[in-house]
Length: 497
Image 1: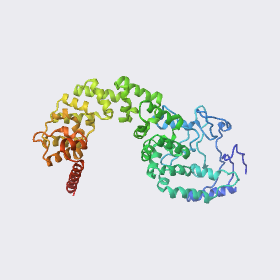
Image 2: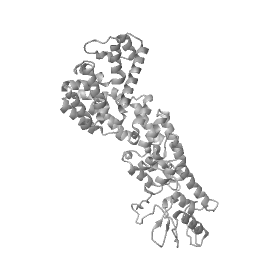
Image 3: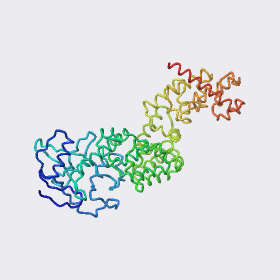
């Protein structure tokens, strides 16, 4: 049997023939894994040599020492996987296990050809049978364990490999069936499970960003602990990881801290930083200089939002930082100008008070609500007054909110629709928690006027309402409201039965 000395420990550059004891052990493993598959003849097995392996002092673009196994191609693949990562490359070269070249369906990826190189380099190496000329591939962890000699010169036995498979199958049976689970991922999965992550969540993460499961558990812990330290709630970590698993790949120094500093520079208080990250975790995948700052400049210079109001606007709608603000602003500004004759200043006031306006669909969101206000007798000028004063009316449900409140206004409170221009806040109040209890409470005390019910009594706090309008104690009003809510709930339950 001929053998070639390895360049470094664990280099799988071995030449062997069938009679060797090594092949006998490999035959036993393959027979157990593949069932009735028969390997008649084994050919020489070798990994293509890579001249970069000889350069032990290679460094990454950030000046960090690279492992002998690191490849610049991995970074290119990461950039191609997600369009949001085009502006920034925050990935550390040393924090990935070598990825298994399998897709979601456990099929091997086609080998890639390196530019400037005439020969095609195989990304995997394995055995080839003379019977069918098809490559028989094992998971990388099993290939390395089977074909590489350890430092003692002994091959891992079958019990060791079987134990590794049993561990992952026992801890994550569903995950083992749905994805090519590597035992090296288990420490990370165990850690993420402390945040309420389940196997189905890991499958979502794998399908969305496979590389996120290959992160070193210490690196992942460092990044998540940093997020927790700046105000992200423990309960929000799971949602963040499902929406943006790439966040495990972003380094604290090169990415997370710079983005947090950017938010603080906008006047956002520390107490709100965590909420903004939970609402829009994708902002970490946008370049501060090339994307986020230009968006802020557009909001100030083109939209017309005052710089002192910018922090409040972003707190109300963090997504405004990561959307195509130019398109959403221009289309909605043109719509409101054409539909209601709204001047630019009024539209800027709407966006400042309720920046979610820039996210709403025109056909399914803005137009139906404007048409509803028209249908109850409001003119365009009245609608413009209401929307400028209370823009969140555009976010309220027609069937569950606006229509029931309008019917209660005219049928129970004996008010005209024009009263909404003076008290547009009425439309934002809860019918069950505020409007109906206060009206019924004053009626029960015989303190409600015979004419139109004063909408001003619905505006102050409960304590002020009891002092100024009811002339009774707060406890008495709260007990009345509780009984009313229970009665309403019972009626609703009986209708369902």
